[in-house]
Amino acid sequence: MDKTQLAIEINPHRMSAFEVKDQTSTLVATRNCANKSDSGYKQTLLELIADCGNTDRFDTFSCSYSQEQSTLVPMSLFGESTPENIINLTSHQAVPKDEIDYNRLPEWNMVNVYRLPMWIKSALIIKLPRIVIQHELSHILRFLNTGSTIPQRSQLILQEDHFCLVVRKDGQIVHASYQVYQSAEDVLYHLLYTYQQLNISSKGELFLQTSTEALHQVAEEVAKLAKTITQFEAISMTTSMNDHLKFQSLCV
Image (cartoon, rainbow, N blue to C red; front, side, top):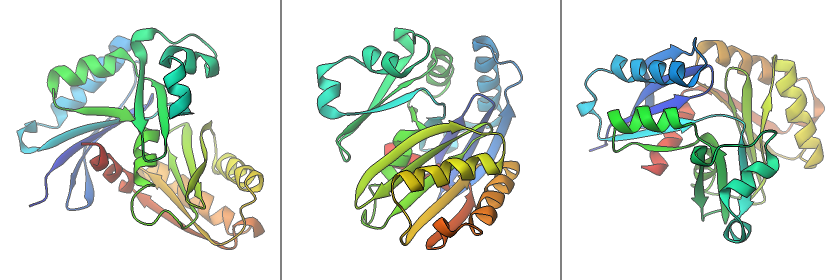
């Protein structure tokens, strides 16, 4: 019997909760973040959990946090340094020590070091003590290690003002980044630039994944524009909604 999972997705603009069961993800509740202060975010998250009703019907709980302050490092380098030093090397402003977290990814011999605000932990752990909270990039990387890792594959997850792009080529992760964007053209520009830098023009797959109807329309526009560019001729493109929420099942 398949277990029922409550999968929460948080970014600085929106929080959504999904029921994941039998390989399908169904939206349970969503809230926009009107008050972008720590106390405002925490209140919005508590309201989202309340919107989910009785959580006893879920067997497992997970949360994906999507934001740009994230750094991938080899396991060997992580062992020689500290999470604070690693993230502060790539951050424009110092990250408080109590807001630094990391996920070990032995399947790729890497560690994802990232910022995780205290309001996420304090709200979720009180309400859902068994919840597993990880960064969005960690979920994508775990998923890219499932099944055959040989095909060239790109995962692009669109959020409200940023997106995460991960590229697997020849069985290796060759690119992982966060970019801000304002339009479908911006997304396509970053995608094209990345493919050119990686010398990708051969057969491969690109998955554009979103959580809302508005974002899905942007993804559809990106795919439509890409079909007019030679660089993407051999690339098979798929757009989908809520599909990537299933990646969280790999961490519980």
